[in-house]
Length: 265
Image 1 (tube, helix red, strand yellow):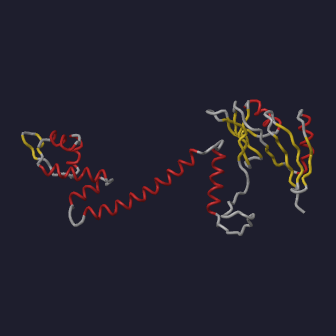
Image 2 (cartoon, helix red, strand yellow):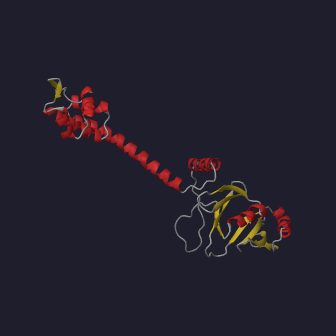
């Protein structure tokens, strides 16, 4: 059959058939009046070549397969290729898991993201220590090793108004503005925690949030807040904690607290 007929029978382009012929993957065509003419073995060879290509074999592997066929050639080649595919599948699974994590990433900048990744790597590399934890009566199962609160989302009516309050009065540092959503990320205590202001024109409950402050700064903080025109209650001493706190509200009516933990006796 001529190259056009072979192309129609296999679904390959004539240029692909010529390439496979030059690479030694099918018997060389004979010439008839200056045109390539292939016998039926070309069709069967190309069928094997296409199957091997779909299975992921490289050109060199396919050449060995068709030129050294027999003696369980399919089996030996397939066993080795299957091992490679399984390793690739494991890598793809790892990639998929990383991409899923990246979809949830809200890091404000590259530097912050890099520090977060390094902390995660260090936590994974650290030797695990099993400690017995006391559990309240009636609880079962393991207790999660939570070490603190990292991020709090606060819904506000007006993002510019809330930004002025949290930045200029409370002194929080802007981390990043979300260009696609009405959200503003603010750093609390450097990289210790994050406050996210989310503009919401709907109805939402008024919540309570407490920020940590040094014990020696609580009196001065109360004075500063009063000078800025805020209604402040406290300092109030909490003997059971122990801690001293001052209370005030943000422009949306959320109940805020500056808490200065003391030392337990």
